[in-house]
Length: 67
Image 1 (cartoon, one colour):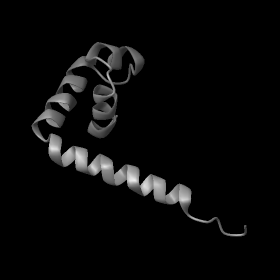
Image 2 (image 1 turned 90 degrees about the vertical axis):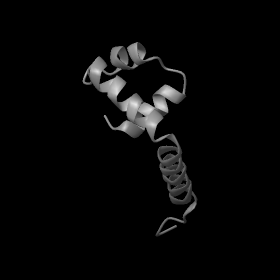
Image 3 (image 1 turned 30 degrees about the horizontal axis):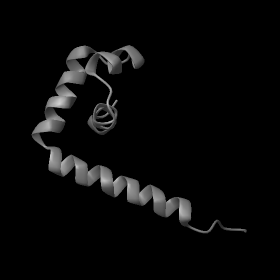
Image 4 (image 1 turned 120 degrees about the vertical axis):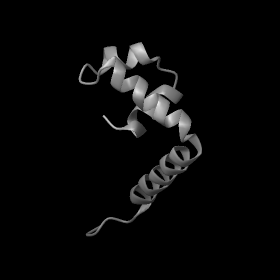
């Protein structure tokens, strides 16, 4: 699980304990490390997440070949 994924869950309202309960492949330590990294680099990571969201919207709006 990436820092971006943890950041999205965390900013969406999930607690660290809820994240580890929902995604048992990541430890409490890993979740807290990801959240700490996110909080220390919030502006950069938020910008990256916004860029990823914009790219996703662009893909959805792009015409499909063969249609």
